[in-house]
Image (cartoon, rainbow, N blue to C red; front, top):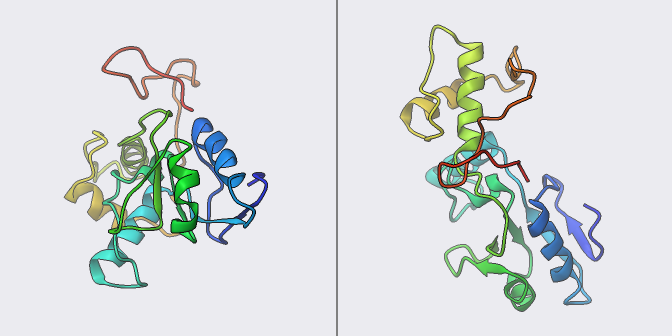
Length: 185
C-alpha cells in the first residue's frame, strides 16, 4: 500500500509476497497514469465467496478459481483496471497475463514460494480445533468436506483461534519438494 503511483480498491488486502511487491513497484513506474489494483491477496473465505458468486452468476464475476487454487491466496496475483494499458509493464517485470478469459488478472511468475493448499490446511485445522466432534482431514485439499464446513463457518470468526502447541519453535509448514521446511515469504 506504499507503492507510488498506485491506488488500491476499497476491499484490497495490500499484501503480496516480497518479490511480487518489488516487481509491482517497477510496474507502477512504467506509466504516468495511476495503477489501480482491485484485488491482491485473498483469504480462503474470500476466494470461496468469489467462487460461489462465479458459480451462481452473481456480481458480474466471469471467472474464479476454486478455493485453494487461486494465486491470489498465495500473494502472487493481482487484478487491475486498464489491464491492456498496463500489459507491457506487467509482462516486462515478471508477470503473466491470464488472457481474455480473465483480462484483469496477472500472476507473478518470477519468484516467490508456492503456498498452494496452506490456506485450506489452516482452515481445516481451525475448524477441527473449534469442532472436535465434526473433524475433517487436514490435508490442504479443497473438497466437499472442507467446502461444507466453510459454508457453515461463523461469519464473525471462530471462538478459538489458531494454536501453536510448540510455541512456534519448529515449523512443519511448507516444504520444497518434500525437503526441509521453508520460511514463509
